[in-house]
Image (cartoon, rainbow, N blue to C red; front, side, top):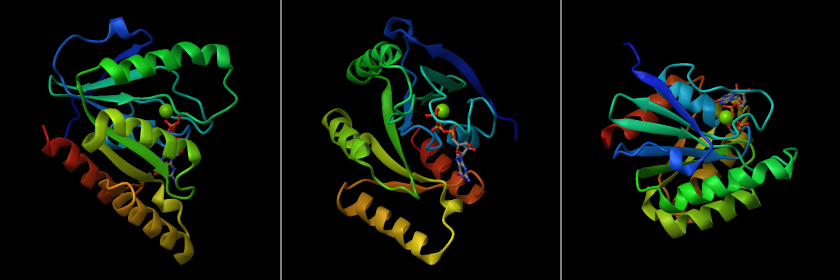
Length: 192
Ligand SMILES: Nc1nc2c(ncn2[C@@H]2O[C@H](COP(=O)(O)OP(=O)(O)OP(=O)(O)O)[C@@H](O)[C@H]2O)c(=O)[nH]1
Ligand SMILES: [Mg+2]
């Protein structure tokens, strides 16, 4: 099946955002957690740029499916090697986008299944709760990298925490395991 997803725009300025009612779904999380890769997996394409080194995405990048849906590839957080001066404008843009953008319908927060919740993840979830409550969903990424039963058990613990502590629906994904991608995609499309 041909994918009708396309790259729409790379945004550095809130005023340049499209003015329409198309729903926007955000992918956010620590640098290198797999946001861009997951967007490629879900759209069955290579529209998002991925990288082995963290800090690849440094703007808001929009992808669009016809006139139905947009995915937003957010810059990762928690990577300290980016010069602070460059980050100030980006932080302002993210802040403005989160506070004012009415198009946002879903918020996927990605957590590396091997590393679990870090302080910054917990902080960001708390902040997002203020604006988005039931629009937030957790995704535990790179599950193919869990090698033994101890690591599998820790994923189980993370899932439990997502459910019981955060009261969030969650997904476990691996870009190498297509069934995990299908489940996420179904969830994304069912709500259109
Ligand atoms: N094994 C495995 N590797 C993955 C998976 N998802 C992403 N990766 C790898 O993780 C690295 C980072 O992926 P990206 O998608 O660029 O991560 P990102 O969150 O967009 O990173 P930034 O844009 O820097 O914040 C790449 O080398 C990917 O190939 C996965 O499900 N399994
Ligand atoms: Mg990226």
